[in-house]
Image (tube, rainbow, N blue to C red; front, side):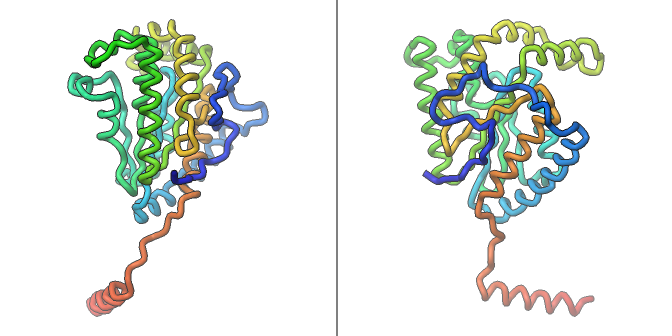
Length: 293
């Protein structure tokens, strides 16, 4: 297995299967920088990501896959905008996965995301992902009926099978040069309630709110159990999970950006070096162009 040396962080989940979701922090520490200082550092970090992304694109030996999972209102969309603003749009692609279409439901659960994997030299971002298939279907097992699976299994046995498929899938990607970072944006139930209230109270945010948000909130404890099991089952050195505190959006965005930057910085990214004869040919072209000035 390729060792991509995932970035060290107090928010990186261990590979021992002992992650306790109840102990995962959701807020920044008391000594965290001010929002103004965080935003300044975020801009600097995004510039570094942009520089490294250009080298990734030129090098073309690695692809990077960033997976984002979270409860509603945790701030996935705004984090992706903040972290990728300023990065060449040709160098990355964001894919948002909602309920499977009829076509997607007729394939195995990894099919629709596999079709959207990033090519070498690019960053692919999954806003939700194949992990929905061990999260939402665990809380709502009836959703599996659309998938016409050949065997009926208790939901936990089904999830265990899918954990194995996910581990195999991510190991295969890593062996073939895809660098994977997985972020669980950890919002508290209280902060989610505050953000839902803002969506209701502000006319410009009404469109973000739906009855389904409240319905899913009633299953909070079930989702937390599903996240804890899925994360413990799939945290590996080649596909690490990071539990990012999400009650402060500026702090969350900076932590994500720094981890992406640090991971890119570990890769042996170099610009391709042309063979000597091609370099000589370039000099001929240069001499010809210079005569036209």
